[in-house]
Image 1: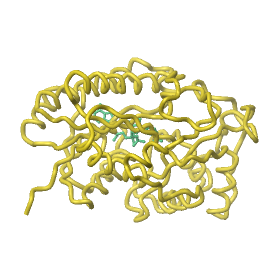
Image 2 (image 1 turned 90 degrees about the vertical axis):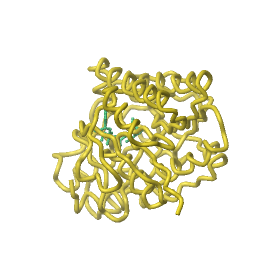
Image 3 (image 1 turned 30 degrees about the vertical axis):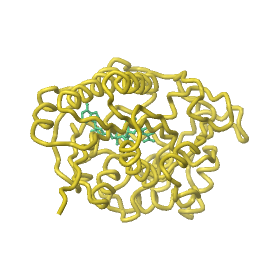
Image 4 (image 1 turned 135 degrees about the vertical axis):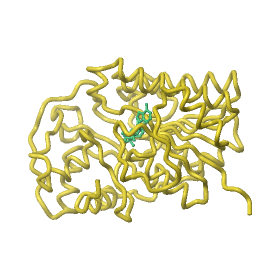
Length: 328
Ligand SMILES: NC(=O)c1ccc[n+]([C@@H]2O[C@H](COP(=O)([O-])OP(=O)(O)OC[C@H]3O[C@@H](n4cnc5c(N)ncnc54)[C@H](O)[C@@H]3O)[C@@H](O)[C@H]2O)c1
């Protein structure tokens, strides 16, 4: 029997990384998860070998790469809160940029040359077109987005100078949970809309605060594109084959292509749960764009990838299953 290709999943105890670890294991890959558990959950570590380490620790990385031979690295490990990044930019540059640099250097030292990176729609800034394509100007509005843009630039430079292959995925809003109910979205504090809506329904949060109701949108609340975590993971899986056939570093948007306002998400959640979402109208949050909707045609074509969850109600349904019977 051929030995399984080993994939290193950095940040695999987190929301998206844990769904990725599951999909990789089910697809027959060998999985190693590296995580410092700063925001991740031990309960989400169900697939592969777990190595507790910090990305910024070169010795730990050297040790890991010396003992295992990785076919590719998937990098989900980052600090991810826009508001916090405005208040504490140094922590974001340290964890996200220096962490990524240490990881790339360990890969280089051990001849690992395939990298899949979790970037974000936040690299674009205020949209200049209805649906954002990958060639849209890159003008992030906050330090979180700027750390991600730095990492993207590093990957382009590493591709040119060191022939490191990479796929940079610019996720729009990740949402939903594995339909099995064994893993799901659990951030602390939670800054994402759908979990906060559902936690308000369940009385786990006093009520939902809508950040801004005077945006130039159809009902004044911000518009976002929600993509199911399973669809995100499926694109990463396809990226492994893509990098076999393509050199260089390529950016792809991952989104559904449809935007929903905060109020529309609340209405959809009320339909799914059959309950009211208690909410108040608050001020805009620093660093938030009014509208972010993806054009993902490039990913669909190059990766032969099509999102399965195209209805927002279906996405919320899986999140609701998770939140009702949450394991962590
Ligand atoms: N959730 C979204 O909607 C969204 C949208 C766009 C981009 N992204 C990106 O996707 C990635 C994953 O997001 P998530 O929602 O799963 O976040 P998460 O916080 O659930 O997971 C991040 C994981 O990385 C680990 N980690 C962080 N810093 C580390 C370090 N220095 N060393 C080792 N481990 C470290 C954490 O412990 C955690 O398990 C992030 O890079 C994020 O920027 C997420």
